[in-house]
Length: 266
Image 1: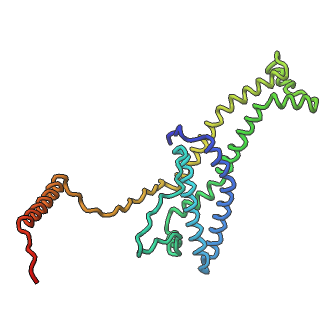
Image 2: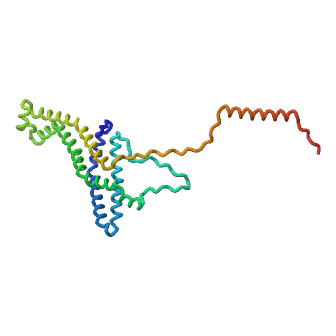
Image 3: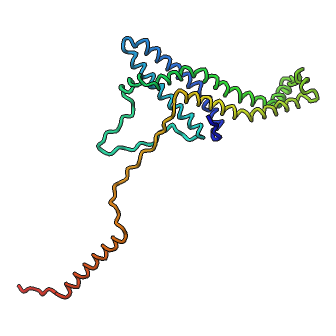
């Protein structure tokens, strides 16, 4: 998968922080629905439960894919579909919610089973990406605050940081405060690689999601209904018709002027 320079590291960080709560919810609901659906399918009650679980998993996976594709495209939102044109009066509007028949048809749709597999098998990956997105930036930021930690520890608790045997061996000619500045500089350098890491993790999860969801289908905007207009006449033909009418009116006026009507006696 090619790297998109427009993909934001902050957007990837936000999406990855939401993987754990959304992943826990999806994992619990999918596992519960599948277990109940399979166990109660013998008495018939579990079939609609299983169908509803698969349909919900497929819809949720497609929404999640739109969010990640929007991130890869540089923030162009794809969650909202294009506006659907209102049908003319007298025509019934299409139902928005899926009917029971579409739910039962989801039992034969491979997308529902792939979505359920994504919700269950992708749970460890969500946890790993959430931990990386949360701990790595915070740890690097804490390393950047090494001088402040040295001052607070020295003034408040009387404990001198960066004065142990390891720091004396690595940086022998420097004082403890100067060593804290070196550690802070290392943190600044590491912070430059954090956006690269976040983008790489985002591309990894987007590739995982695309493996189960397949190609995203983007709806095209409906064609606008324009009123039917009569074809316009050419300019020369319109001008000739106007002149012919004017000449006919002048001829009638001259004819009336030459033959005035005499009043009839009563």
